[in-house]
Amino acid sequence: MSRKTSFIITILCYLIAFLFFTSFNPNNLPVGLLLAPFLIIFLTVFMTLYSAVLLFTEKVSFTHRMIIIALVSTATLLLLIQSVTQLTVRDVVLSLAIILISIWYLNKTSKKPEV
Image 1: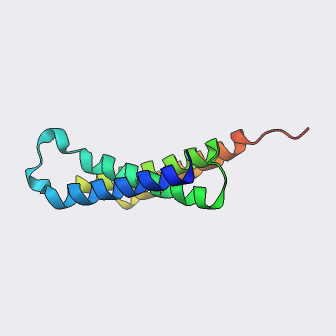
Image 2: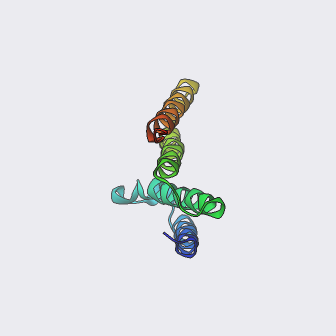
C-alpha cells in the first residue's frame, strides 16, 4: 500500500470514528452494534501506526505488520475488558507479557539466516 493510500484510509478511519462516536449514544446502541466501537478503534489505531511506519520505511514488512497487529489487538482487548468492568492489574500484566513474548517470537522467527 502506498503512503498516499495509507494516509487517505487513515483520515477516512478518523472521520468514520468521529461520526460514529458523535452520532450514537453507547447506552442506546442496538445489540448488533455493540462491538462496532471496538472495531472502529482497532482499525483507526492500526492505520495510524501503519502510516507512521510508512513515514520511516519504504515498505511495511511482515514483521512490522504483525507487531502493529499485536499492539493494537492488545490495546483493543484491554478496552473491551475494561468496558465490562473486569480489568485488573493481573489482566494488564498478562496482556503485556503475551505481547512482549509474541513480538520477541516474531522477531526471532522472521530473521533470515545469514549465508
